[in-house]
Length: 72
Image (cartoon, rainbow, N blue to C red; front, side, top):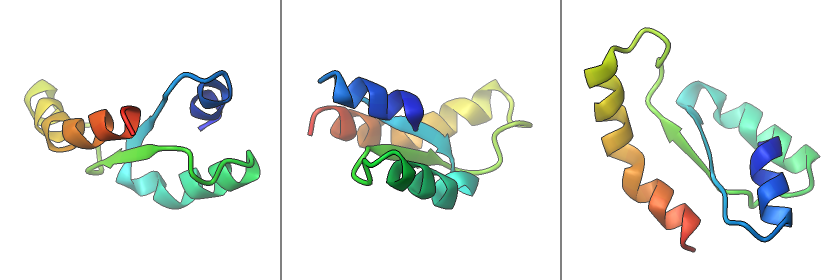
């Protein structure tokens, strides 16, 4: 969230991408950083044990959300 907020303050569209396990933490961070509307997209949890094929499938599910967040 810190990087997303920093880029947004600089005028560069940004989006945080994290595992769905971190929805609450990302909201808390965005609020603490004063940018509750900072864009964020969440992939299905877990990711740490996903193989390359599983990661591609997770990414495919959210790529449109990421593009939308960056071009809003």
